[in-house]
Image (cartoon, rainbow, N blue to C red; front, side):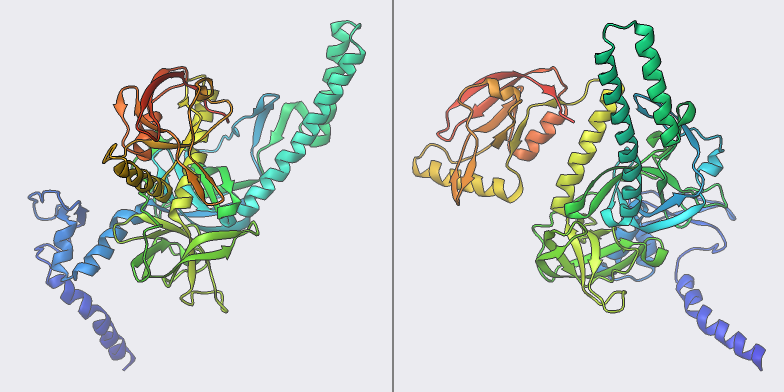
Length: 506
């Protein structure tokens, strides 16, 4: 009787699945099916060979509704960019060589297979993240890596204290022994350095690597050797506590990970409306790449972040968000990132339909700055020229649109123009090359009163339509480059100025 019950149960569970597959127009169901892009051509295959089909054809064969097809396709395209983030306080760190110029990469004799395993140690927390740059940069929540970040910062501050002490003491002794031979001064400096190394445990110029490591994996199986899930070590590039975000960088060469690094695109969080459909992808309770759906429940919410400040303009959603979703993307139905899931309100600790995400516009602005500075730092360390620096900020998003409408209204009244182009200059750094140019006016807002300033309408002879075009144009310029800028004032008068781009301050 028991065997009969099991057989019936198996039939009930399997029959619907078998029925679904019987409706798929494949002759050989035992063959492995590969989903190809929707525009891929289906190739002829022999019996027993692999079959490649269009993803859209598979969706059609399953009888999915248009709404379901949208969600399925977003998960298919976007989920490979979502990673599982975890941090570990290592019980045994490898040794790295350290010089007075700074910390070098840890030297490890482990094989590649061992590198891609999590080290033994205490877990410091986990969550989600997503790829945002093809060079291996990942965005997550700060609170996901907070304990690892604070542990490492404590070690760095401890070492800095002793380094500064040795440096200051050496300088004072050198000043006092200014009339002594150089051999005496060198001997004293050597004694001080050896003393500091002994106190900090860095005898023989060796030290332990940072105690806490951050690792990511791409899905449950991810890039594996066939049996072991691969974890990739990450550096915490920087954090923005006020927004509860952190930017990580995978230490593995991006050339070796091109098939995994698929950057996600941002959408506008300021244009979201209540009732709009949303999707959340993350790793709740460690379950990789889980997708949930919901709506924009409210906009403009303020929530208290880990830094104790109010994060403004947060998105409230009823997408199921659970522990482990933190740091994952909140998407619109175009598959664009409009927020980063950060917290829930729940009596049980699990989803109760009230979740919050940091607005994507703010995340993009902060993350882009962190990534850009890190790239410039790496170029500088490699003795290569970085991006050119003008030192001028321009209005973006809603502010730019508001200024454009205001100026256009004024120009139409004076019959000067029916079009406003260019990037509105909002501020100029005191060290900017533009400071040498007289009469450049910036837009200012004081007590609600707007004073519109100059606009940059051309860079190197290339027309500038708006702030986005200006930023894109400047990304292709290098430090030391001589550049012409066409500037237009509020009256429509233009003039050309010439500047030499500087080095981005780090």
